[in-house]
Image (cartoon, rainbow, N blue to C red; front, side, top):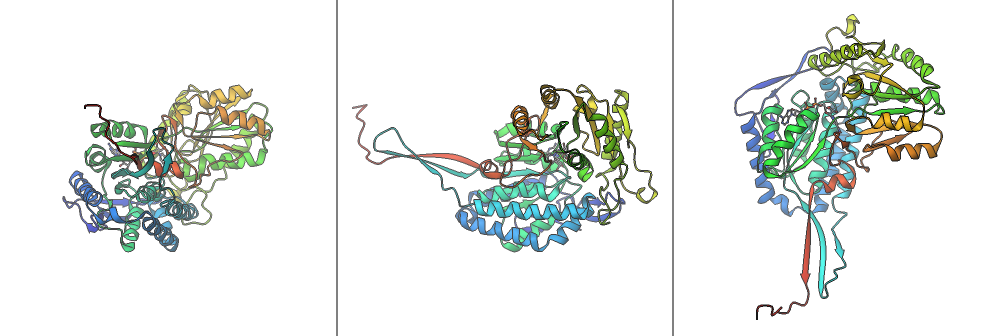
Length: 488
Ligand code: NAD
């Protein structure tokens, strides 16, 4: 049985309960892990509190923190294959994707390792004579971090690396269905010798462990990645002690294709945008918005390519798309297909669980395309989080922007055109945290990531991602103090 990591020790939950971790490819049990609860979360928060308020971590320099994060990056690179295999077992994604995740995770730790000691604050030109004014950034304190199942270790790295670079202590709860790589990285932190209590990993459900992190008055900041319904609960709970809050929520992201776009490249990226990781990506390009001149040809080509997507085990080199994460999730996606049909969208391909007998034990959803879609349909508005694309048609630039922005979400979006002035005009109008021109999906550790509107609050990655984990302090000094004599 795999244990959790609290106060520098590997421990079982107070109740002795366990949870089986299932491989979504074949439903086999791949591990048994301890199942923590509210009390375990409480113990971890206490340890993180003590480590922040009284521990040796306070005196570890920013340079040393950076060096420790650099060591994490190096160890992730070294354990890349082992970590990638675990991630594929746990999520069903292809090994190639998992390996790319590990490269990106190492890059995130390396980036924040470099950033840790680069900003010692700045001096303000004080308007009051004989005074100096300085602005410094300090760690926030104890950070609660909650991650989802689609990119288990990648999402953890986006939170752990900046929090530690800034000098905070953390209690992280991975998704209860995909904890394996997060447990492994706790081993890496342990080997490097982060002081006791600085990093705590608590396993367990959202309702018990996650809710305790959001509720506890000993937690100063909560950073959450997941769905909006949970995000809302966390925001309410966080108000108890006015925690700082960062929410990375869902998206229903538009991918706009103009008639002058490079047709083959736009098709290729459109496929990748929506079917990568079986569409279980917050920034998936699930809303295709295609110019009327090329619409029919575009859809025809898309359907032809979708029919050829090879589904299978993440460990099979031929596999292009793995299973979705669970039976519940597959059922939710199938329900959305029903909704799309009822709303009058045209189901062109897919729409059901795979009938391939080789895949019968896994949660395989056929890649699906709906055409004749309209902005007001639920299939267009709501996040399906699976391999389902909707296609809408547009005539003018203004109409494309209007359709793209007609969403409660605002995470990401793309535009395909060879007219760069038009591309600039479009991205200027898009109400989204990330916009791509003639590309889809890339993010870089150096640039912030996060959503407008109901896609979230705050940003991860980049310098902004580090600043989220800091408080700002103004230090004002009188260099020539003399009595004021006001009350003389
Ligand atoms: P989820 O909200 O069900 O769960 C996310 C995490 O929250 C899990 O660890 C879960 O245990 C925990 N949780 C559940 N209930 C909780 C509660 N009451 N209090 C505290 N924690 C609780 O989401 P999911 O199904 O794991 O992930 C899918 C969602 O995540 C999608 O909506 C997706 O768009 C979003 N996501 C967003 C980004 C981003 O960067 N914006 C990245 C990845 C995923």
